[in-house]
Image (cartoon, rainbow, N blue to C red):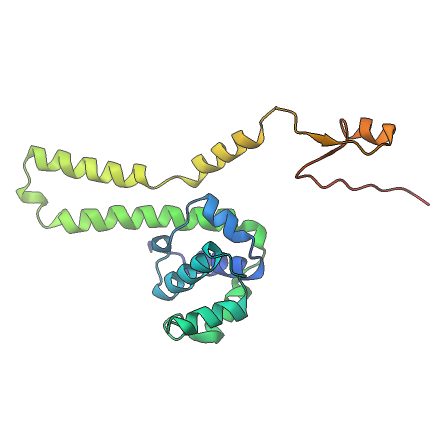
Length: 194
């Protein structure tokens, strides 16, 4: 089994290019450059992350400009490659699942690399060295936040039962139907028949 998923990597990057707000989901789940396996994806994500951190708009034009400015456009696969990333995205709504795949595979790669580095010397290890290796593997796993754990933490926050301040509309039936008025951060759609 490969320790990377080309399609998940392309889908995450494509989702961010289609819907730039998707970078917020990536940030929420601590997606980092090294969670990507392919070098061109690392370059593209690093550029997107820097653009977001500096408050720049994220789209094809600004990405191309920033990659050219850093002399990384060709290393990132060229314009045709990063514009093709959007075709790998069936829907941007699945970015959470694609990030979860990247995080799991990155953790597996980290463990594999750690054990592979020590495999040649494992026969010569004594008990203390084996315990140290086991602790390093444990730390690698624990230092890689599980997306599910982060999701649970985020959902706990959203379940806060503290009432949010409402803005009264002045229409008593509407205020009653909306629990006191319009709430910050919500979209209230009013419909009716002619």
